[in-house]
Length: 316
Image (cartoon, rainbow, N blue to C red):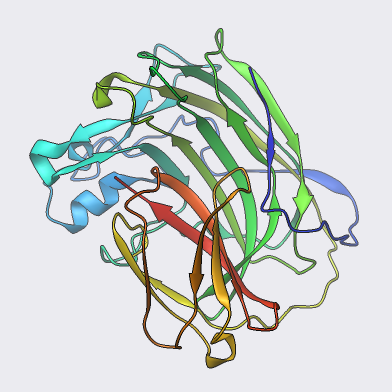
Protein backbone atom coordinates (compact mmCIF):
# COMPACT_ATOMS: atom_id res chain seq x y z
CA UNK A 1 0.00 0.00 0.00
CA UNK A 2 1.37 3.39 -0.98
CA UNK A 3 0.85 6.60 0.98
CA UNK A 4 2.00 9.73 -0.83
CA UNK A 5 1.90 13.42 0.02
CA UNK A 6 0.45 15.36 -2.88
CA UNK A 7 1.42 18.91 -3.81
CA UNK A 8 1.78 20.99 -6.96
CA UNK A 9 5.49 21.52 -6.70
CA UNK A 10 5.37 24.93 -5.06
CA UNK A 11 8.01 25.79 -2.45
CA UNK A 12 6.93 25.39 1.16
CA UNK A 13 6.37 28.53 3.21
CA UNK A 14 6.30 29.04 6.98
CA UNK A 15 3.34 30.34 8.97
CA UNK A 16 3.53 31.55 12.54
CA UNK A 17 1.13 29.63 14.76
CA UNK A 18 0.28 28.86 18.34
CA UNK A 19 -1.19 25.85 20.16
CA UNK A 20 -2.33 22.79 18.26
CA UNK A 21 -5.77 21.34 18.80
CA UNK A 22 -8.24 18.93 17.17
CA UNK A 23 -10.73 20.39 14.71
CA UNK A 24 -14.27 18.99 14.68
CA UNK A 25 -14.99 18.02 11.06
CA UNK A 26 -18.76 18.00 10.40
CA UNK A 27 -20.07 14.42 10.28
CA UNK A 28 -16.49 13.09 10.31
CA UNK A 29 -17.67 9.58 11.20
CA UNK A 30 -20.56 9.55 8.68
CA UNK A 31 -23.15 8.70 11.32
CA UNK A 32 -25.78 11.21 10.13
CA UNK A 33 -27.64 10.64 6.84
CA UNK A 34 -30.79 12.27 5.46
CA UNK A 35 -33.60 9.74 5.31
CA UNK A 36 -36.61 11.61 3.90
CA UNK A 37 -37.44 13.83 0.93
CA UNK A 38 -35.65 14.20 -2.39
CA UNK A 39 -32.22 14.23 -0.66
CA UNK A 40 -32.71 10.92 1.17
CA UNK A 41 -29.42 9.01 1.02
CA UNK A 42 -27.25 12.13 1.34
CA UNK A 43 -24.62 12.34 4.09
CA UNK A 44 -25.29 15.32 6.35
CA UNK A 45 -22.80 18.16 5.62
CA UNK A 46 -21.43 16.37 2.50
CA UNK A 47 -22.18 16.67 -1.23
CA UNK A 48 -21.65 14.76 -4.47
CA UNK A 49 -23.01 14.20 -7.95
CA UNK A 50 -26.45 13.62 -6.46
CA UNK A 51 -26.71 17.37 -5.87
CA UNK A 52 -26.26 17.97 -9.59
CA UNK A 53 -28.90 15.30 -10.22
CA UNK A 54 -31.40 17.34 -8.20
CA UNK A 55 -30.46 20.45 -10.19
CA UNK A 56 -31.25 18.75 -13.50
CA UNK A 57 -34.54 17.36 -12.23
CA UNK A 58 -33.74 13.87 -10.94
CA UNK A 59 -36.49 12.84 -8.51
CA UNK A 60 -34.13 11.68 -5.75
CA UNK A 61 -30.56 12.11 -4.57
CA UNK A 62 -29.77 8.42 -4.96
CA UNK A 63 -30.45 8.44 -8.72
CA UNK A 64 -27.07 10.04 -9.51
CA UNK A 65 -24.99 9.63 -6.39
CA UNK A 66 -21.60 7.90 -6.36
CA UNK A 67 -21.30 7.59 -2.57
CA UNK A 68 -23.42 5.51 -0.19
CA UNK A 69 -24.13 4.79 3.47
CA UNK A 70 -22.54 1.47 4.46
CA UNK A 71 -23.52 -0.21 7.73
CA UNK A 72 -21.63 -3.45 7.15
CA UNK A 73 -18.15 -2.10 6.38
CA UNK A 74 -17.05 0.57 8.85
CA UNK A 75 -14.24 1.44 11.24
CA UNK A 76 -16.43 2.54 14.16
CA UNK A 77 -19.97 3.59 14.94
CA UNK A 78 -22.85 2.48 12.73
CA UNK A 79 -21.78 3.63 9.26
CA UNK A 80 -18.98 4.55 6.91
CA UNK A 81 -19.14 6.27 3.52
CA UNK A 82 -18.58 4.04 0.46
CA UNK A 83 -17.42 5.82 -2.71
CA UNK A 84 -17.44 4.05 -6.08
CA UNK A 85 -17.65 4.52 -9.86
CA UNK A 86 -21.11 4.43 -11.42
CA UNK A 87 -22.24 3.96 -15.02
CA UNK A 88 -25.11 6.40 -15.66
CA UNK A 89 -24.91 6.20 -19.45
CA UNK A 90 -28.55 5.13 -19.78
CA UNK A 91 -29.71 8.00 -17.57
CA UNK A 92 -27.50 10.99 -18.43
CA UNK A 93 -25.06 9.65 -21.05
CA UNK A 94 -22.06 9.73 -18.67
CA UNK A 95 -19.93 7.46 -16.52
CA UNK A 96 -19.03 9.13 -13.22
CA UNK A 97 -16.07 8.52 -10.91
CA UNK A 98 -16.86 8.11 -7.22
CA UNK A 99 -16.59 11.44 -5.40
CA UNK A 100 -17.82 13.14 -2.25
CA UNK A 101 -16.81 16.45 -0.69
CA UNK A 102 -17.38 18.31 2.54
CA UNK A 103 -19.68 21.29 2.09
CA UNK A 104 -22.50 22.31 -0.21
CA UNK A 105 -22.90 22.27 -3.97
CA UNK A 106 -23.58 25.25 -6.22
CA UNK A 107 -27.01 26.41 -7.30
CA UNK A 108 -26.69 25.52 -10.99
CA UNK A 109 -24.93 22.93 -13.14
CA UNK A 110 -22.42 25.61 -14.19
CA UNK A 111 -21.15 26.26 -10.64
CA UNK A 112 -21.99 22.94 -9.03
CA UNK A 113 -18.29 22.20 -8.23
CA UNK A 114 -16.78 21.63 -4.82
CA UNK A 115 -17.07 24.61 -2.47
CA UNK A 116 -15.83 23.38 0.91
CA UNK A 117 -16.67 25.09 4.22
CA UNK A 118 -15.50 28.33 5.93
CA UNK A 119 -12.18 27.84 7.72
CA UNK A 120 -9.45 30.21 8.98
CA UNK A 121 -6.88 28.06 10.77
CA UNK A 122 -3.67 26.28 9.82
CA UNK A 123 -3.66 22.49 9.36
CA UNK A 124 -0.74 20.65 10.95
CA UNK A 125 -1.86 17.04 10.29
CA UNK A 126 -4.72 15.09 8.73
CA UNK A 127 -5.98 11.56 9.12
CA UNK A 128 -8.57 9.07 7.92
CA UNK A 129 -9.49 5.44 8.33
CA UNK A 130 -9.88 4.00 4.85
CA UNK A 131 -10.40 0.72 3.08
CA UNK A 132 -9.84 0.38 -0.67
CA UNK A 133 -10.89 -2.53 -2.87
CA UNK A 134 -10.17 -2.83 -6.59
CA UNK A 135 -12.84 -5.28 -7.74
CA UNK A 136 -11.69 -5.67 -11.35
CA UNK A 137 -7.98 -4.83 -11.75
CA UNK A 138 -7.10 -3.15 -15.02
CA UNK A 139 -5.07 -4.93 -17.67
CA UNK A 140 -2.79 -1.90 -17.61
CA UNK A 141 -2.47 1.11 -15.35
CA UNK A 142 -4.07 1.26 -11.94
CA UNK A 143 -7.16 2.59 -10.22
CA UNK A 144 -6.45 5.11 -7.48
CA UNK A 145 -8.16 6.68 -4.50
CA UNK A 146 -7.33 10.15 -3.17
CA UNK A 147 -8.46 11.93 -0.03
CA UNK A 148 -7.71 15.66 -0.28
CA UNK A 149 -7.31 17.72 2.90
CA UNK A 150 -6.67 21.26 1.70
CA UNK A 151 -7.18 24.88 2.64
CA UNK A 152 -7.50 27.73 0.18
CA UNK A 153 -7.96 31.48 -0.04
CA UNK A 154 -10.50 33.14 -2.33
CA UNK A 155 -9.89 36.58 -3.86
CA UNK A 156 -13.01 37.38 -5.86
CA UNK A 157 -13.58 34.24 -7.94
CA UNK A 158 -9.91 33.21 -7.89
CA UNK A 159 -8.88 30.46 -5.49
CA UNK A 160 -5.36 30.05 -4.16
CA UNK A 161 -4.16 26.77 -2.62
CA UNK A 162 -2.78 27.41 0.89
CA UNK A 163 -2.13 23.98 2.44
CA UNK A 164 -2.24 20.38 1.24
CA UNK A 165 -2.17 17.11 3.19
CA UNK A 166 -3.62 14.68 0.66
CA UNK A 167 -3.48 10.88 0.75
CA UNK A 168 -3.04 8.66 -2.32
CA UNK A 169 -3.93 4.93 -2.27
CA UNK A 170 -3.07 2.75 -5.29
CA UNK A 171 -3.61 -0.81 -4.07
CA UNK A 172 -6.03 -3.00 -2.15
CA UNK A 173 -6.00 -2.68 1.63
CA UNK A 174 -6.78 -5.42 4.13
CA UNK A 175 -9.59 -3.92 6.17
CA UNK A 176 -9.50 -0.34 7.39
CA UNK A 177 -6.07 1.27 7.58
CA UNK A 178 -5.16 4.45 9.43
CA UNK A 179 -3.75 6.98 6.97
CA UNK A 180 -2.10 10.14 8.32
CA UNK A 181 -0.26 12.94 6.55
CA UNK A 182 1.79 15.97 7.55
CA UNK A 183 1.04 19.19 5.72
CA UNK A 184 2.73 21.07 2.88
CA UNK A 185 2.22 24.83 3.14
CA UNK A 186 2.12 26.26 -0.38
CA UNK A 187 1.22 29.93 0.22
CA UNK A 188 1.79 31.97 3.37
CA UNK A 189 -1.69 33.45 3.77
CA UNK A 190 -4.66 33.03 6.10
CA UNK A 191 -7.10 30.56 4.46
CA UNK A 192 -10.84 31.05 4.32
CA UNK A 193 -11.95 27.61 3.01
CA UNK A 194 -11.42 23.98 4.01
CA UNK A 195 -11.72 21.25 1.37
CA UNK A 196 -12.05 17.56 2.12
CA UNK A 197 -12.63 15.59 -1.07
CA UNK A 198 -12.64 11.81 -1.45
CA UNK A 199 -12.27 10.45 -4.97
CA UNK A 200 -12.14 6.92 -6.42
CA UNK A 201 -10.98 6.91 -10.02
CA UNK A 202 -11.66 4.55 -12.92
CA UNK A 203 -8.89 3.24 -15.14
CA UNK A 204 -10.03 3.24 -18.76
CA UNK A 205 -8.46 -0.17 -19.34
CA UNK A 206 -11.14 -1.71 -17.13
CA UNK A 207 -14.20 -2.87 -19.00
CA UNK A 208 -16.90 -2.84 -16.31
CA UNK A 209 -17.31 0.71 -15.06
CA UNK A 210 -19.92 -0.07 -12.41
CA UNK A 211 -18.01 -2.89 -10.72
CA UNK A 212 -14.64 -1.36 -10.02
CA UNK A 213 -12.85 0.42 -7.20
CA UNK A 214 -14.64 1.05 -3.94
CA UNK A 215 -13.26 3.39 -1.28
CA UNK A 216 -14.64 3.35 2.26
CA UNK A 217 -13.77 6.27 4.56
CA UNK A 218 -14.53 6.80 8.24
CA UNK A 219 -13.42 8.82 11.26
CA UNK A 220 -11.64 11.74 9.55
CA UNK A 221 -9.40 13.92 11.72
CA UNK A 222 -7.64 17.27 11.47
CA UNK A 223 -5.09 18.83 13.80
CA UNK A 224 -4.95 22.61 13.52
CA UNK A 225 -3.01 25.53 14.94
CA UNK A 226 -4.54 28.86 15.88
CA UNK A 227 -2.97 32.30 15.87
CA UNK A 228 -1.85 32.51 12.23
CA UNK A 229 -0.34 35.82 11.20
CA UNK A 230 0.36 36.30 7.52
CA UNK A 231 -0.26 38.85 4.76
CA UNK A 232 -3.14 38.31 2.36
CA UNK A 233 -1.92 38.28 -1.25
CA UNK A 234 -3.80 40.03 -4.02
CA UNK A 235 -4.28 37.42 -6.78
CA UNK A 236 -5.66 38.26 -10.21
CA UNK A 237 -9.33 37.37 -10.85
CA UNK A 238 -9.71 34.26 -13.06
CA UNK A 239 -12.91 32.38 -13.94
CA UNK A 240 -13.51 28.90 -15.40
CA UNK A 241 -16.67 27.51 -17.03
CA UNK A 242 -17.83 24.86 -16.76
CA UNK A 243 -16.29 23.40 -13.62
CA UNK A 244 -16.67 20.37 -13.40
CA UNK A 245 -15.92 19.86 -17.10
CA UNK A 246 -15.91 16.89 -19.46
CA UNK A 247 -14.85 18.39 -22.81
CA UNK A 248 -14.11 22.08 -23.53
CA UNK A 249 -13.26 24.60 -20.82
CA UNK A 250 -13.32 28.37 -21.24
CA UNK A 251 -11.52 30.74 -18.90
CA UNK A 252 -11.28 34.49 -18.54
CA UNK A 253 -8.42 36.23 -16.79
CA UNK A 254 -6.73 39.59 -16.39
CA UNK A 255 -5.15 41.32 -19.37
CA UNK A 256 -1.96 41.26 -17.27
CA UNK A 257 -1.64 37.56 -18.16
CA UNK A 258 -1.83 37.91 -21.97
CA UNK A 259 1.30 36.32 -23.42
CA UNK A 260 1.59 33.98 -20.46
CA UNK A 261 0.17 30.50 -19.99
CA UNK A 262 -2.14 28.32 -17.94
CA UNK A 263 -0.44 25.21 -16.59
CA UNK A 264 -2.59 22.27 -15.46
CA UNK A 265 -1.26 19.68 -13.00
CA UNK A 266 -2.64 16.31 -11.94
CA UNK A 267 -2.95 15.17 -8.32
CA UNK A 268 0.69 14.03 -8.26
CA UNK A 269 2.01 17.40 -9.39
CA UNK A 270 2.72 16.31 -12.98
CA UNK A 271 2.10 18.99 -15.61
CA UNK A 272 -0.50 17.63 -18.06
CA UNK A 273 -1.42 20.72 -20.13
CA UNK A 274 0.01 24.11 -21.04
CA UNK A 275 -2.44 26.56 -22.58
CA UNK A 276 -1.32 29.95 -24.00
CA UNK A 277 -3.23 32.96 -22.69
CA UNK A 278 -3.99 34.86 -25.90
CA UNK A 279 -6.60 37.30 -24.60
CA UNK A 280 -8.44 38.21 -21.44
CA UNK A 281 -12.01 37.14 -22.28
CA UNK A 282 -12.00 33.93 -24.32
CA UNK A 283 -9.33 31.27 -23.76
CA UNK A 284 -10.30 27.65 -24.42
CA UNK A 285 -8.84 24.17 -24.05
CA UNK A 286 -10.06 20.55 -24.10
CA UNK A 287 -9.95 18.07 -21.21
CA UNK A 288 -11.43 15.18 -23.20
CA UNK A 289 -8.12 13.28 -23.19
CA UNK A 290 -7.59 13.64 -19.43
CA UNK A 291 -8.71 11.00 -16.91
CA UNK A 292 -11.51 12.01 -14.54
CA UNK A 293 -10.25 13.58 -11.34
CA UNK A 294 -9.25 16.81 -9.66
CA UNK A 295 -6.55 18.98 -11.23
CA UNK A 296 -4.74 22.12 -10.13
CA UNK A 297 -4.03 25.10 -12.38
CA UNK A 298 -1.58 27.97 -12.25
CA UNK A 299 -1.79 31.01 -14.52
CA UNK A 300 1.55 32.63 -15.33
CA UNK A 301 2.05 36.09 -16.75
CA UNK A 302 4.37 36.67 -19.71
CA UNK A 303 7.16 37.46 -17.24
CA UNK A 304 6.60 34.18 -15.40
CA UNK A 305 4.77 35.46 -12.32
CA UNK A 306 2.07 33.12 -10.95
CA UNK A 307 -1.08 35.25 -10.76
CA UNK A 308 -3.72 32.61 -9.99
CA UNK A 309 -4.16 29.14 -8.52
CA UNK A 310 -7.21 26.93 -8.39
CA UNK A 311 -8.89 23.57 -8.98
CA UNK A 312 -10.55 22.08 -12.04
CA UNK A 313 -12.70 18.94 -11.72
CA UNK A 314 -12.77 16.68 -14.79
CA UNK A 315 -15.65 14.22 -15.18
CA UNK A 316 -16.30 11.50 -17.76
